[in-house]
Image: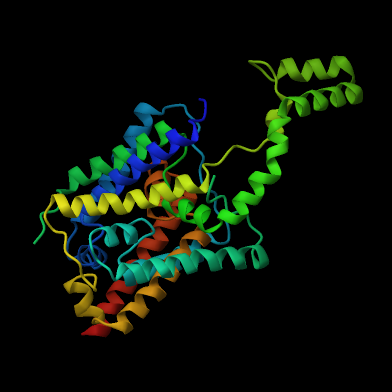
Length: 141
Length: 208
């Protein structure tokens, strides 16, 4: 498949972003209370949503992308410690990298602080990675 | 109180987005990768600039490589390896130029669009109002004011640092990876979800 032009990429990424932001908001993934209740298992709706999404995506890939090579992420020494740090941050802020932006869109101004933190975290990881860690990140293929 | 989507509708929406993202862009959905390319825009620009002359001369470089291969290994061996490689016209240059990435401005469009999506959802469902907190549950657990903002900044830093270190987040590892049973993604998702569960229970115990 030929790569779409830059303008077309802006349009597609833009439409996908709006769809994802809208959905995350209407699901309740951008509501700290809903997310916290998922993590302490007092409300299983979001858990079902996520599990259902994984199952349906699996079926969707089989049906529409069968036989296509989709790049996969590989295990490296950062997988586990990175995930533990991310999990801690998710529990504290109710936000993953997409959700913090959606929270702000909903009018929750406190998410600005989460976003500042994410920016600093991403920036500082890039600084230490090149100096101390030597595995292939493969994050942005 | 907001009326959120039932779980099956949410699943359907997330799955449709994840699958169509791949079908339209031939890239797995992953939001933390967009953050990485925006924060690293300077490096991306430097790489693009240094690669530009190679892209312009890709055909010439391919010819030069082919000529060098012919000179080194002889016509017979070269033709064998070329025809043996299978369908299509062999392009030695393809091995030289790395797969093009979406420019960082496209990723910025993606993140801004997430904001627009959240805003549109709030407006359409009639829930748009400005708050300085993340809602009643957050305020009950962490209070309001500058110390809660400081905590959000700390948590955000962990999210940013952690997702970069783990090479993905709930979209890249969780949706794109788990749906294809990628081992590293299953492990990462189990670890970040498990940690979030443990920390959330700990917070509840500490607050009570």
